Image 1 (tube, rainbow, N blue to C red):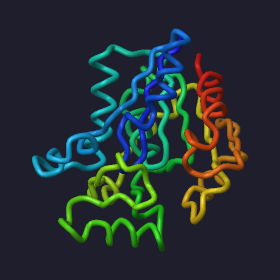
Image 2 (image 1 turned 90 degrees about the vertical axis):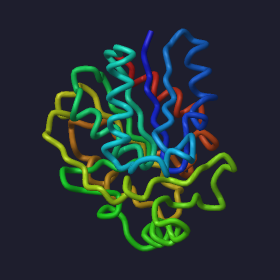
Image 3 (image 1 turned 135 degrees about the vertical axis):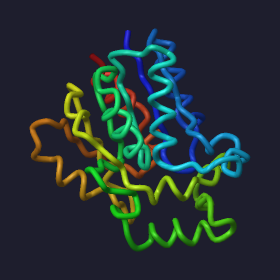
Image 4 (image 1 turned 30 degrees about the horizontal axis):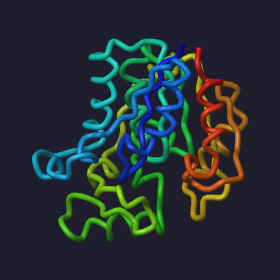
Length: 222
């Protein structure tokens, strides 16, 4: 049986993955839907600075404390930054990386440097209330919470160790309006180190194509 660590995108917690995680567990697999620091308890946003390193460390700590190996590490949207950083730190624990409509940064990149236009309008405009966190967009799930602004601004630091991960998957969701992810789909499409596919659905794959998502994860398992 496989082990899945599932990291959600901006403003979302492990609850987003829970229906999928429950299905995986029913089939005998192990699934860890992750709630990153500051995305569960809003008071965490005020207690200490939270940046991209914080979120990467959340995943690295989980892998170490649960002593997980041969993991399928999946990141949706913003979480592509997080799983990239975690894989670079502990590639020996990861069998597959699955990026679902997600950022695939190179060393020195940030969410801010990889986006523009409407996305910067949201990140900066959404942080006007406190200068610390980005308010969720109204169209998101009512459970969505403010997201730490610093995690979107901080540049990732990579050594190249993540290239030791045996399998890498990219899932592009083609019907996402104003998507910032076409750049990664086009860059990786011809790269033999990646398995790349496109689905004709919107950004919320768990709503629009849950069965496809489940099959993608199962196929990525060692």
